[in-house]
Length: 390
Image (cartoon, rainbow, N blue to C red):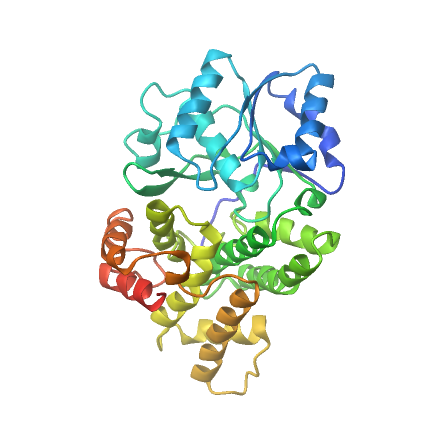
């Protein structure tokens, strides 16, 4: 295990009715709030009414930015910054899923930057100061409620890129599993795939001495495999929703990667190109690509990891031949993601073969010449994975 520094600053309030702490927590940081949300589902479910009532009763002034897209756009970030500056906002409160939280993080960072906020995303300028953020989570997927990163899309340039800063981590997040009862089946399935993908990105690394981290990762994967189908069948099953919600946070808050060093991710960057060009659901793209990435990178050197995965997560008989275990583990992964109702090919979600080459080129260019560190992917590798996924 490698040396590491551990700091996970977000305070979590987990469980039913934890929303009651919202007013007191916000007032530790500010009193003029920008309330950020997506397409309006929080109004249909009553979460909006609950949140705004608490803000009013707490004497907290608030302004609103609605309509955040599933793949949040830099144009929406710009709108949020404008509202925040015009009203001297001192706290950002996203209520929703990862897209809403990501958008809020970049609003909070862009508030103090005089140039175009896209500069911060592409690295032309560095994040130096961030407005404090809190979060009320309504979708288990991205883990943005407990990490310091954000992913933003620019539809004019066909780019979907990440940006991060320690101060972009929410000061607190409220995780009430009942708020996810009304999440549609397609989003529940895509969210489960996203959680699993975050876990895979940390699990498949070249570090062999991180025994504890790998067992934690396997536990998260088994939780998704157990509770994803239950949540689809019984949307108001509290234990299923609770386990998925907590898995979402733990999969990407750094816990699984501590002791493994810097591990540039593999599947997420090549999926980002699909969303950048086609604006598709993130988790759906990940689910389609992941088994094909596994097949592409599997070799004699990393065979042991796929065997470990197959035996510990899927319960495959360890007495079988190792290559057979690895192939069975990959097949079980593919079958599970399909059983969630997620399409199995890129063609099914409208991706056109004529765009694969330029998406592969962009993926490599946007990641410094190769994608990932588990087994670095060249342009030819990324293109091959895309084609196998068609």
